[in-house]
Image 1 (cartoon, rainbow, N blue to C red):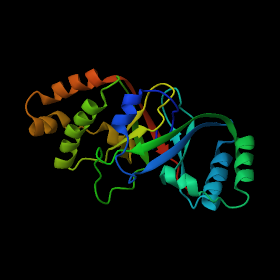
Image 2: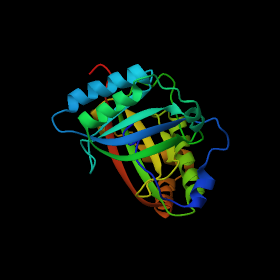
Image 3: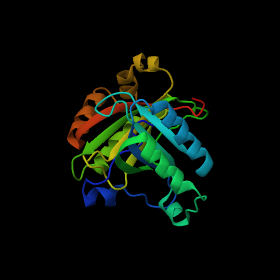
Length: 241
């Protein structure tokens, strides 16, 4: 869930017309990138979790960013939902006062708010594999007009994930872009840090599906589509902490 939250403007109109869902049947998460006040992190986490439980039926969550320029910050996330849900919001009395108190007492800075829509055609999900405690989030900034080519490339990788029953992978796009143009996010859930050390011999698997030399060509296609990318590893904060 790591970067399941950042963003506000960017990319091009052409990107949005290519990437928007064709139906209203979609999942979306809204995320707030926040910096908590120093020395108040533990208390803040408890207060935020209590707020989510009381006013949002536990649909909220916190992600702790472990690396990069945002290390030490959090994503405060809600979802899944749709934009239509915002037309029917009926929050309990006391919500705004409690929310404002949290902001005043515990939050040093609000950064970006981002709406991440899941692309249901660009994911692989194993049954019974939902106990991940961490997320590897790769944020992608595409060259203009490259969304379709990028989608085709991701589908080739998903063929490999499906054939070999690899770990879950999800693709999201930011409905309103992001301030730096990183408007696509690839999410790779995992449980143990040691999982990142495992060698799954991906080259052999990929080329068994797409042919000899195909992984090199896929890398070249990535470079043609992607202007820049970076990765964040986030820890899902347990509600029991």
